[in-house]
Length: 185
Image 1 (cartoon, one colour):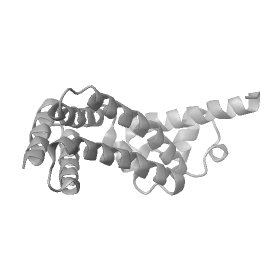
Image 2 (cartoon, one colour):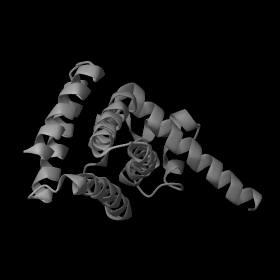
Image 3 (cartoon, one colour):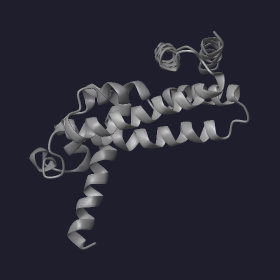
Image 4 (tube, one colour):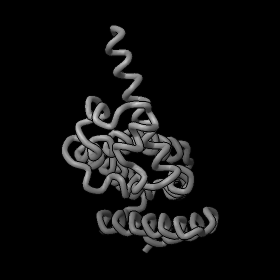
């Protein structure tokens, strides 16, 4: 890698990190071209030498976050000793990530991201849906697609409860109980 490529890569990393910081502190409304450029020390118009649009930058931020989240969830599930433990781990890790990684902000940011980033986000979400499908196999549920949708709905409700200030422990306990109820219905 030559000096120019290295500089470009370092600047791109700084841009994505600045965008992430702005999101953590101020939410999606804080992510503007002017704010990112200022944080990185670029002129606003120079930002567009590195990203095609703010939607492109939003997609890059989300794609930097999602693969690590999926790997963390899969790692927790892989350590489980039983199907119930695997389902618990899936629910608990999803909620833990949501509570600590500003998941709601990332998902809000992902809405409407165009092009390649949208396809990548959809692919990562499909990995999570596939993981739910694999978790359901030992339970031999009569309608795995419906059971998976309902478990995902339980998680979405759990994410909302966390956003409203409910405790991670309580939300996890209720979500796990609901998911276990679904697979045993």
